[in-house]
Image 1 (cartoon, rainbow, N blue to C red):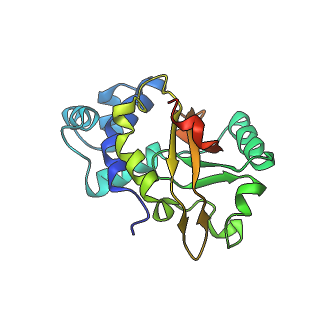
Image 2: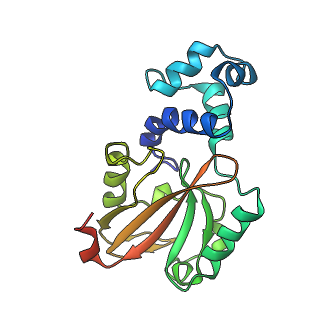
Length: 193
């Protein structure tokens, strides 16, 4: 399995546009900074074309979640200190940013083995299916709704994912990138969303 979902490419355009608007950067300025044409940035944002090669790497570096501010670090601290099984990942790359102790207990290796690494290769079929539906569920809209779903048990040598209800929330970070808060919920709560 790949470390990064192929599906995330469909979110590059909306994510790039949202990052640019939040940071008050014009397409022309972004294009100049990336060494591409303004029309290319426009096509990326509309989803007509996906960035490739060095352009793709530059966009990913730009959009990957970074915890730069005191508020971002406070969010990491809250997740780490939570008594609930929760973790925080980069919304675009699924890179682990923070994890609660109760979630870490479900995993078979020390947390250091996972930090700042994509968790996508551990996604269950239910998680993969939901990832494919994010755009249709309004995930990339300015006020994205929480999304609730169920996932089946998945066992890997490094970790186990229990059969559970899952609630994901898209949280903006101070630099305009996004993190995804992943929480367990009662399975019955997923049918309401």
